[in-house]
Amino acid sequence: DVKVTQSSRYLVKRTGEKVFLECVQDMDHENMFWYRQDPGLGLRLIYFSYDVKMKEKGDIPEGYSVSREKKERFSLILESASTNQTSMYLCASSVISGSVGTDTQYFGPGTRLTVL
Amino acid sequence: GQNIDQPTEMTATEGAIVQINCTYQTSGFNGLFWYQQHAGEAPTFLSYNVLDGLEEKGRFSSFLSRSKGYSYLLLKELQMKDSASYLCAAVPSGTYKYIFGTGTRLKVLA
Image (cartoon, rainbow over all chains, first blue to last red; front, side, top):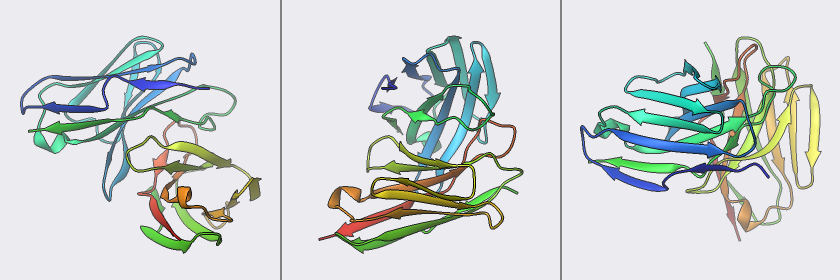
């Protein structure tokens, strides 16, 4: 079974703090993704990475950065947390096989972040 | 632009059949995924369609018409545990990035 884990289920931070969200997958997947999920907006892609040290911006990268130093770990960083970053954050991973875009993404349990 | 549309909410009765529709517009097309997400949990993979037609997996089936930009998820013999959100996601050509719909919240009533 594919396993994607995230460092925290719930997190409360203050405005201006630097926040690290960690994601680890155990299936040697090349691709890793960070999404945020908000009511009525669905899942929106923040960043993704297709290899170690490689990253690409998603649809809403502003206010976020990422780090991928090892294949199994993908970190999302909020440089200076703001209240509008209160959300559910979901990490996912997928293997690269065959045609681009045909690979199932497997999701972690999510981190519900509240910024006060 | 790229867009996915699905109904916000549906209600059905235990034991019944329900069909959740999804229409999409993408630049090219590499397939369509359906995920199930229970409240407070991660989305879990249900099905993937890339060719026209019906894919059946037990009580769940998914249909795709590429010419119409349309898919549906069919759930048979509904159970209370099927109460969840169902997410439709299309994949444009040449990318790993899914385009997600906002999800359909299904309530199954006894």
